[in-house]
Length: 253
Image 1 (cartoon, rainbow, N blue to C red):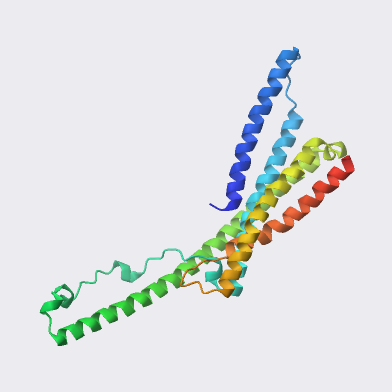
Image 2 (image 1 turned 45 degrees about the vertical axis):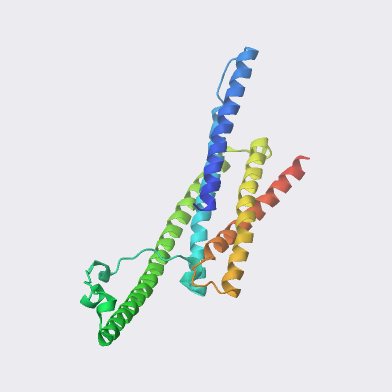
């Protein structure tokens, strides 16, 4: 599972627990004080808009990182960013019977038959190697195409969700709301989310990229492009919200 979805899942769980605990505490305190219970619909709508903004931004981040990963594949090669997807070749459906010499006991074969068997096995190994090479090429093409489709879909939908909720927030909030505690919590929460994504993915991206460029991979396809693309996407978002959080704290102090 990508770290973006891990963070989104953790955020959803923590948000649900926070709402349950906070709601229960608020209800108990109101009942104990004897005050009438009322729901602030405007506050709930604002809270929903903030949650939608965060969710849309995370979805956009996933899509944008996929697009950057595709761009890196175009520059450094598709194996830099992708692991080959499984692709079935026409030869996979063909039943290739074994040669009678392969079924015979090696001890019963003559020297000429052993040489013939060796040529048959060598030809088969060469054919299998070519098939695997073709499968790997087609698998990388398939992974590249799937990544672009995912990137465009997630980036577009995430941007639309983010923009719609940002527009709703700007329409419903006033200047006093922007300086309120809910807005500060929102800024700090986004700073923490994208800070965690960046701090976790950036060192791994640098390590995997340097290993890919400097060391012999030994035939492994490490594909460091994914972690690198996520770091490139999350880093500026983190810095923007970090600066916004610091400015908000300084204005309130």
